Every structure is written in structure tokens, then in C-alpha cells.
Length: 351
Image (tube, rainbow, N blue to C red):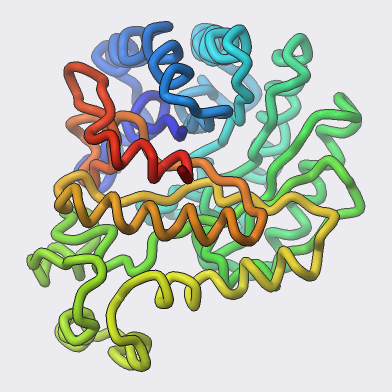
């Protein structure tokens, strides 16, 4: 189970003036302290999940370059303890790094700045030292690297892994490819000479379905139409034509269903077959909250069944969403924290 909306996606920066984006407010800190409780850990464990992935932002953890907020580190440490005591694994994920906000353009890009890269590595060194007492917690060094030169990202990833290994030789580390962790980017990702590095990708296709009528992506907001899963691909071709995308990617399919998803995931399956001794993990996938529940159930069931067939573990997105999260992918009710339907839970678990 993935956890966003807490230390990441607590605000949508694209609606804020640039001078406000780097500041944390009293309301932000109230949110960080109260959004989750141990009852949520008990809830997720009772549902049957075996690990969790929690995102945090560099601007939340880093007070200034080289100085890290002990309060935030303490909240993350407490979160890890809740799940470890219940036998669940934990992945700490740097969801948004300075210079690599996956959904907001920034004036200086991470992979174009030696200074930002030094800060990035220093952050992970600080986290490794702070979490030395929790060797079972995995570190996912960056979520959804933008569409950048893969060679530059491969160098920074290798440098970061080497820095972590100097502090902790045995911890599991997770690395993903460029282009927002899309599976077709996996072949351009360097495979490191380190048996305790796992590799991640994300799955949100067809995005016209998973992000339908979402307010953060211009195309889906513009098209403004319900998009059924297991539906006629002509509707998806209409979406592509009206929004300037390639309509032919939906050709050859009788419906947007399991066969379409298998085609989308073929690069992940090929990567797994080529690297049988490595862990490939689908670290994020899900559907927008306002899609019809039967469609969400069917899509999730097809994705998890394909992943299971190919021996790929997964982590669903997302437990709960904040009101600020314009694309709410939550799987539980905001107030009761109950899963939205029993069939959705079964699909998430791959049953």
C-alpha cells in the first residue's frame, strides 16, 4: 500500500506563486503531525498488505542545504515503527527532489546542477545515518525522474547507491528509470553491480482512463469525459485526436482491457526475463477516485493478475488523498478509512 498526501502532495505547487512554493506553514506542520496515526497501520495490516511505500519531499525534510528537520525524521521513524511491529516491510521514497518535481517545472533541474546533485546525495547520507537502527527499511532514491538524459540519471543513481553503501553495505535500495518510471524506459536504466538493488516502474495506462477528468493534466481536464475500462477503443482514439496525441496506439484492440495492459507492460516483462536474478517492482499504479468503482476494480484486477503471472511484486497507489491532491487516487474512505469495496481490496491484493 502506498502512502502519499502526507509528506508529499500535501499541497499542489502548480497553483501557488513561486515565492510560496518553498515555504512550510503552520498548517503544513499541523497536517504532518495529524494526518496519519497508528490506527492506519493497524488498518492496512488487517487488510492483508505485506509492505508499504511512503513518499516524502526534499523540501519537507530539508530545512536548508545540509540541515534536516529532526521533527520530520522523527515522524518518518515513528511511521516505520508502526508497520515494522506488525511485520510489514517499509520503503522510504523521496517523492519529489528539488529540481525534480514530477508535476511542476522548476527553474533549475536536478540533473543539470552539480549543487543540487550534491544536496541530493547528502540528503540520502543523512537518512541512512538516521535510520541505521532500522536496517529492514528500504530506500527508494527518487520517484518518477523526469524525461532527461538517462545516462546522466544513471550516473547520479550509481553515485547515490555508492554513498549509501559506504554507510550501510546491506540495505535494500530501489532505483527506477527516467520518463516518470514508465515501463518502456526500463531498457535505458543501468543495472548496477549490487545484488541488493531493486528496480521500479509505474503503471498508469491508459492514462485517459486512470486520470479521467483529472484537474491536473490538461488533456484529461480538457476532454472532460467518463472513460470506461473494458470499453470501445474508439472512445480513446477520440480522446487522443482531440488532445493532439497519437490515436493509433489504440489500434488492434477489440477493447481497452487486459490485452491492452499486457501490451503496455511488455517492456517490463522483457526486462524481468532478461534479469531473472533481480527484483523488478511495480511501485505505483492506480486509478482516479471518481472513476466508477466497477471500472477501478476491473482495471486493478487485470494489472495485478498480469504482474503476478510474471513474478513482479507491486505496491498500489494510494491509501488516502488530501483535499489538495487534485488527482485523488485514494482506496479508502476519507472519514472511516474503510476500503471502498471488498472487490477492490481483493483486486489490490491480487486475489
